[in-house]
Image (spheres, rainbow, N blue to C red):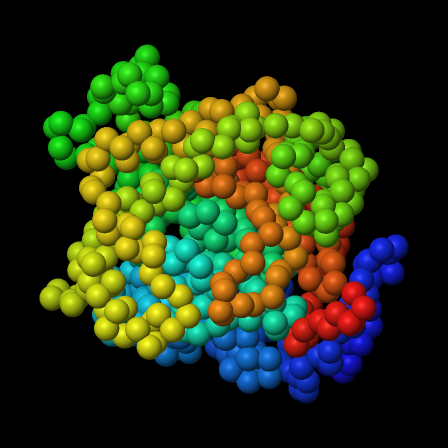
Length: 573
């Protein structure tokens, strides 16, 4: 791709350090990036190409970039059946028997989403290698029913970044370190690092990530792609290696809002086997600790309470899980008349992110949005609930892993509990613990069960902070359609010794509320993408997609990754 020895776009500003880029990684005769979903749909329907040809093109792009060239290391495993599946779909296409609009579109999925085929499902851990899931996850089933080709699995922060307090995003014992395609020495973020990198690098038009807190939107921000973190319960979590039943969700990552919306149409199908889809909170079995729900119950646990209200999954105002055509929300005039609140308390962690964010606010105003600035979620100024967030995940991790292992691993598998994983890691420390420990795992294994009253009280506190005293309060007090904040800062350098260097992010309130986020690129600094996040209440994806799409069409900032080895800061900086 030639030399990229130009200064960063923001380097000419007064007081800024000019960065000199090293020469880009040569990529001669590089297969082109994936066309968009709409372009693929048109080419397939017109007979201009076949599903096999589409899959072969994706495999060629992966071959050129993933283990050679810049060696992005985003794909942990390819589906050995991909071409035979493509041939079957071509027969259906020729017969006019397509399974839906996404028929024949390849997709990569994160390696914590079970597939009952020849591929592994390991969450990046060597402990699960060889223990193939015996059935599909709900998500994999939806993809197959829609006629999509599951091309392979993407690398991730091992165990979705819940193993260690200090780790490098995008590193796993099984998959190694995934690289940021914009600057190869920069962190791709995680935990859905491989899915973010794969879409940014054009392996596929769409990929799937999972999020507990930031794991879709953060890598989307660092890699310069669109990420949709759906409301908990909108997409089935059955068969996804869990962290938290109260926060886990699965969503699209793509190069455009339109492509992400098209994939969300496939994924957003209620699953009665998922407690979050049917709204039934898993009440603890112990009669001593089982709470009793009363209409007048206080929404937050207090020391005086002897009977706690039951926590809940997000609820749609009209009840149930909405069935929506998210592609129909793609309106280029969607910002006109929208009331959007600026969460000023979520800025300030990065001057570069702030600069891009201010430019985005100007663009939103010019597009006809009414900007309410500043807006505050009351819980932003209350730091006490923050101490509950990780313990809740630890309680739920221990229980959730045991349930997943029992339901999806082969009978008699040597891994049946979190304790088994911890023991495996200790026995294989040279491979699994060479960089990072398993401190969070150890804490989680020491936790009690979900019948622990302390667990339930902590869940109630963080749900109140995220919902009633958080996002809902900010939206309702100001009569807003959505909230906005920077997604995260430009990607920091990779560091396998000390782990991630975290500048800041804005995903936590939505995480503990179980509410949706949509992030997309808003600009670039030093050749690195910076994202903006649209945030809303429960099941507000349609509104957020409408706003994000209109913003995307307005600013038109997308850039192909340059695969630069890094940036050199002059000695006098």
